[in-house]
Length: 590
Image 1 (cartoon, helix red, strand yellow):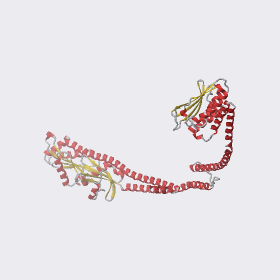
Image 2: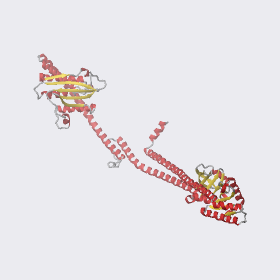
Image 3: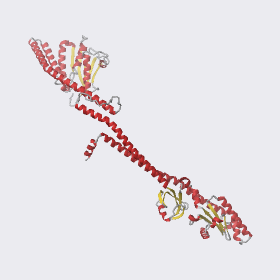
Image 4: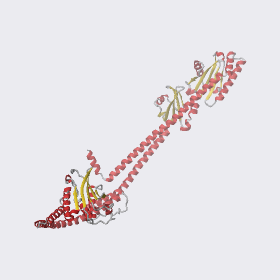
C-alpha cells in the first residue's frame, strides 16, 4: 500500500508537485494566521480582565476606605466633649426647657458642620436621634426614607451597643446606612444619649470609586452578600432570576443579562465579606472582534487565491524551460550526432535552469566528441592489433638469434660472452613480456636486476660491487613493474661513468606500519638538493635517467596515492634513492 502511494506520487508531473507544495504551505500559513487571530481575541479578553481586575481592586479599596472614613466621622463626633455635653444636657432636662432647646440647636449646628466637612456628593444626609427630638442635615432627603425603616435601623444600632452598624438591607432602594449608638463617656456611665445615622448614596459611591463609564462606556456594578443582592446599578438585573448567570463567573467571562452581552469580572471586598461583579457592555467589543475576524478571514482567502494564481503563472514559466530541456534530451536520444536547438539562448542565464541547459549542451558535445574519438580509436585499435600480430614474429626471431650466439660462444670456449648473451636474452624476455603487468612481484624485478648486473659486471669488472640485502621472503610482494631496476641503473651510471674508483651499490628493504621502503644506495656520486622537485619543475632539463626518475614517481603516486613515491637524498657517503610503496593485503615479509 505504502509502495503504491509512493509510486503514484513519484509519477505526478513536476508542475503539479510544486503547486501541491505551494498549496500546502499557503494552507498552513492561512491556518496559522486564523489561529493567531483567535489567540489574539482570547488575549484581548485576558488583557481586558487584567485591566478591569486592577481597576476593580482599586475601586473596592476606595469603597472600603470611604466606609471607614464614615466610621471615623461617627467616632470623632460621638467623642467630642461638646457633643457629649449637649446630649447629656438634653437627656437630663425637660423638652421645653431653655437648656434643652439650646442644646438641640447646638447639635443641629454640630452635625451641619460635620456634614459640610465630609460632604462630597456621596453622603446624602446625617440624622441625629435623641430622647426628645431629631435633627437632620437634609430633612427633604431624610423624609424619603420611611419612618419604619429609620426605626428598624435604630433598633439594629441598639443591638450593636455603640459599635458601627452597617445596614445593607435597603441599599438598592434607599442607599447604604451607617448607624451608631452614642453612649455617655463621662464617669463611664455609658448611658444612651442618642443615635447617629448616615445615609450614603450607593450610585454616587460606585461611580466615584470605579469611573468605568469614562473608559468603557455603558457599565454596571453588582454587590452581593453571599447569595443576597445588596446593590446593583439600574441597568442590570431587572429580572432577579438572572442572578444565576453571575454565579457561573469565577474570575472573568462573557455572559448575557437582560438580552445584552457583558464582560464580567468577579472580585471581593473582604473587609465586609461582600462579593462584587463589574460588568461592561461586550456587544460593541464582540462586534469589533467578529468584524476583525471576518476581515482577517477575507484577507487570508484573497491572499490564498492570489498566491495560487501567481504560483500557477510562475511555475508555468519555469516548467517551460524544464520542458525544453526534456525535449532536447529526447531529440538527442534520437540523433546523437549534433546538439539539439530549442530556440532559446541559455548562455547568459545565471540560474539553475540555465546551468542545466548549458551543462547538457556541454555533455552532448562531449558525448559527440567521444563517439567520434571512440570510432577513430576502434579503427586504430584494429590497425594496432594487425601490427602486433606482425611484430610477434620479431621477438621470437631475436630470442632465437641470441640463443644461437650464446651456444656458438660456448662452443668456442667464450664463457663470458655466452653468459652476457644469456643475461641479455633474459633481460629482454622479462622486460618485453606484457602479460605479467598485473601480477608483477619483487622476485621478478630481482630477476631483471640480476640479469642487468651480470651484463654490467662484464663491463666494469671489479669496479662494480653490488650487494642485494633484500630478504627472499619479500620476493612474492606485489610491486609495479620496473620501478627498482631503473634506480639501480641510475646508481651505476652516476657512480661509475665519471668515476674511476670502485662503486659500491646496496639494495635493501625495510618495513614499517605495512609500508615498504626500498633503498638503492651507491658511492661515487651525490644527489643534488631537491633534485626530483627541480626535474618536475623543469629547473633542470630531464633527459635519459632524469625522465626515468620522474616516470617512476608518477606511476607509484597514480597507483597508490600522493603519500607514496620516490625520495632522493644523501646519507653519509651514499647517494640514496628511496622508493615508498604500501604492502598490500596478503603480501608476506621477513
